[in-house]
Image 1 (cartoon, rainbow, N blue to C red):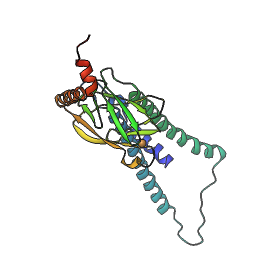
Image 2: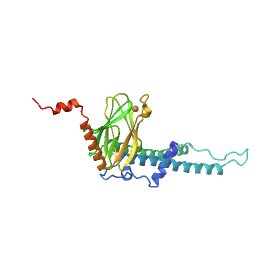
Image 3: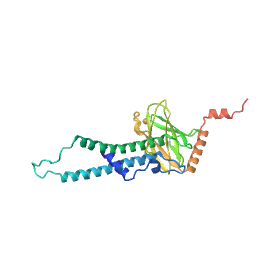
Image 4: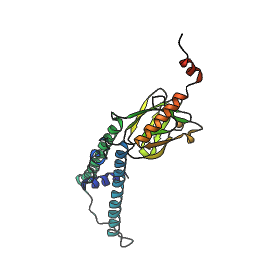
Length: 253
Ligand SMILES: [Cu+2]
């Protein structure tokens, strides 16, 4: 499989079908390269490589098996023994070519990692708190909810914390996952480029209720998001306990 991957990627590279991630990834309206798109491009290239090399190797193997098959039960091969130099060359030259493809994929992985770790400046920030067995989303303005609602066309950065054990924030449709670890603040960012209702699921076994630790994630048009945020802000302000509200309203002496 490893050899196949290498040769397949090499063939794709030789055919000129492997431009860099920067050229492949779609740019959003704000010139943003989405980590989701970059992941999909890289993964699709790996699958292409595997497929191409699988077909090429299978075809060559079948051809050789038929061409040099034994024609009688006592047939003996006639190939001459390779010299040491030739044996080494046959091993090293293909290995070097295949390694070139490995390095190319590694370089793409590095680019991808940098894209994923560099949060755009205008990102909407939401704090995600995981606890057995739910996620809570805090928008930092008094709005907290168990559904993650985000506007289409704006990057979103999530600050990930946990109150108890290690959880993992698995945003499947956006091809992203990051752990939530007690005592640390991790981060993850994504770019919702179109309206989508999907889910996040915990991807680290965290106790009895792990399997039901999910939440809805909605990417909605900006106007809908603003309306949603405003209505939740209003609700949050109305839900101040009566004792505080009356104390605040009481005339000062
Ligand atoms: Cu969990």
